[in-house]
Amino acid sequence: MKYAVYLAAAAAEISGCFAFWAWVRLDSSAFWILPGTISLVIFAYALTWVQVDAAGRAYAAYGGVYIAASLLWLWLVEGRVPDQWDVSGSVVCLIGAAIIIWGPRHIS
Image (cartoon, rainbow, N blue to C red; front, side, top):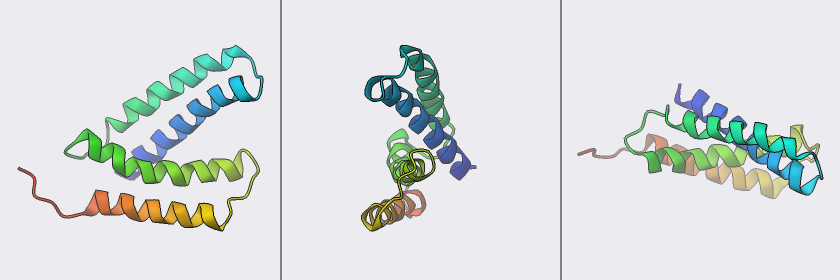
């Protein structure tokens, strides 16, 4: 379930941020603010469903997922193929997220 929550959070955050990008950078209607705001609220709420012992750990691990999902958005929505540096950087971040998620730790 943790992975599905991270993917849902990434979709909500990226689409919410893109709504603001569309409004400001693509000269779209200011009405993009409403769905963008709703999407960002859904993103923040979704991260509360991640089963970890601390919020900061959930957010840190999510960072790697966000980077990979952003590059998928770049490719699928914006039509720009990620280059080798995008992919390499994303892999490094996902490895870091995996270490955070699965690393052994003592919880007191």
